[in-house]
Image (tube, rainbow, N blue to C red; front, side, top):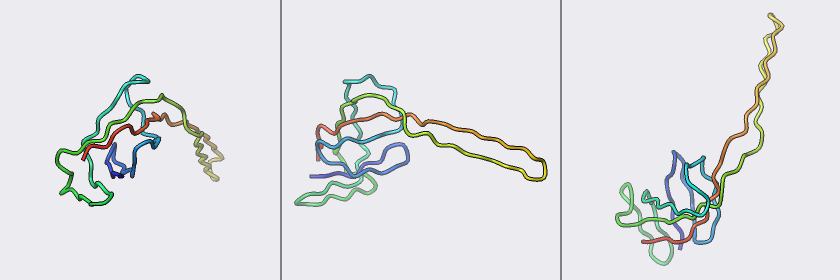
Length: 102
């Protein structure tokens, strides 16, 4: 059984036991999160929501927060001889799917 969920503007296809990286969530490691924005549930019978499946939810266990790879940008203006280099490391929360309720 798998589910397609919507979280923070993105859609994820998850099944039980999968680990997913979400944008940073204010939750402690070891706590649980329920997401009820389930767009589709697949398996033997497919349920498609309009826009979400009623009564369905996915339960996640928070494994911890981590930093992603460094993303850098470089801006160069040739007529002014100016150079700007910036970098950032996005923050993620790693979660594990524990239960899919249809």
